[in-house]
Length: 294
View 1 (spheres, rainbow, N blue to C red):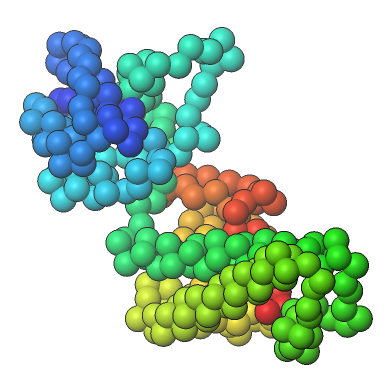
View 2: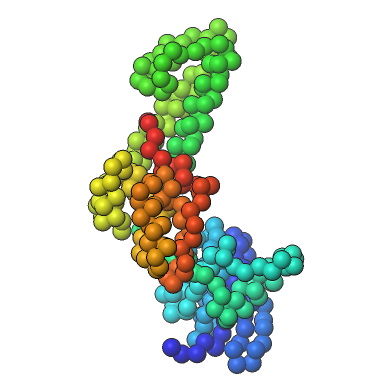
């Protein structure tokens, strides 16, 4: 491998990017302020004296910059933010300091890369998470209707949100016209969300055979209690299962994840050679991965 000539740390924001570059031969440190445009940042990195290696933190801007730099032949590391070393006394945060820190950590080999997913894998993950967000909206809409009826002392003797319960809701007539209008609006919102959820679920099921996770979904469906949608949710959160084979502890976690689908999708994403992280109960996929009644 050719010796790296230019090292660059990028502090990436939605509207701007601050770059800190270090010339390996002269040791000169320079800063540049760029717009948030991916093409402009990629062109800046390509113009550096090569070979070049770049790093930035994983964040809401996604992986488009990493893909474009890789296509240009520029080495790029997308660093896991939670694994970046931070000194206790390092309390001052500025864009220039953050960019310089990334460049120096990259030179020292102390950054933990995350895996950059393929575009089709990322698109399918967005679809899975769109369904997850929609299910959260549906739960909140149902809660609003339930609390409205409770305030009017209207109760249902049975299981909520079954077909019989929905028929009962349609027959309710509240004494106050305004309250009745609010009830009808809430029921209409619930019906619309159900239609949207069914549409997303049909798309997810149809995309599985040609998806990057077709084999993993088929294997997970062999486990009791895991259907196609739950298996796809697990794959979307885990990303790739090969990272659990780095050591004995990781293999143990992988087997435990398959035994406990409620917690399987919440492992940290780390890159090749990285250590698989722990399982977090607070991950956004935790509630989604629980089998729930519709």
